[in-house]
Image: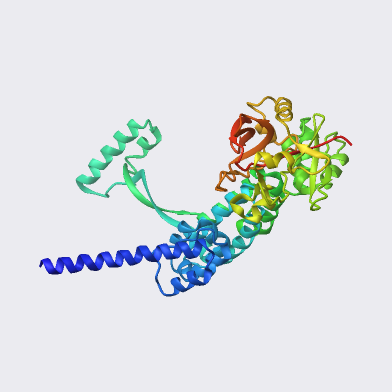
Length: 461
């Protein structure tokens, strides 16, 4: 008996050790970008869990395609980003993968609401695939515990007892009409379980996501949300009157004129971002004084990138994050170029001080203080400055997160962090932060080697 136990234990230890070594080898291959080895290990069945690390979405989908197909829910849990972007279209074409497809849609919607253009492009393809999968349109049946009136037995002592219950329960509920109906139609109020039919959770997710997305996303991607809603309106039964468009703007402006109410600045700018100059034409035809914000442009001579500039209380702010690539002291969030396109680059404070192009400079601590006062005070200013707020001044603060001195990135979609010129001791600098759900603009002390966003100020002509 002892010999058998010892042999079994030895075998278990060997298998466990092999599994541990296999996972170490997988991590090493993934982290070094050795896709061929990853594919070979997957093909031989040598892995015990999925690990994607920094694999691109396409590479992860290529390496793990068989596993993604067989285990979509587990695969999404292990590699949500790679699965959503690299395999989302395929999983949403699989009639048996409703849950995984819904998770993909949720993930891409959240990225889109953070201003990620790539997420909305991916969501466009995923939604088309999902809405072509007929099984996803079926209502979902679900058992629900409830309490309701149920007919009494038709005869005997049970009927008499039930009739008494009917009267007593109606009395306790002050339901006079039901009490009067008890003799002719005796019922009693009981706990029961019923089967109810609910709309497809995927269809609900898409409908709500598109409708709410236009109004809560950064203005830079508002038009994309409107286009998504328009493209999928028929399949999702979204009425034309609910879809933002220039016709919607016409009705909106006419209503405000009829009510003699001012046009909400945030809504106006949202429409302007999507459909300028048509919006100004609508306002002019109705003889309304309000107009879309006026932007200047600034072309960075170093790489040709063009930035919008807005005069806010006499200061000409870049209303986009700087995105000039420097070899030292600047990175993209997660070191992904696509994040730079969406949110601009992140810089250390020393780099930030010299990163702005000739003819502009880094926004100072005093610049920020003046902006906060103009926007109603630091405790309230974020509402008027953040991209998903009223954004009354078209400042459009994007939530591009930050990275620590090791380049580890965090809070994308939630936090916006901007360097100022001000030091806070030898190793720290002063920055500004705001969050997607808060009113406050905070002055914070940050390690100078952390990577934050940069807003430039255009200097005098």
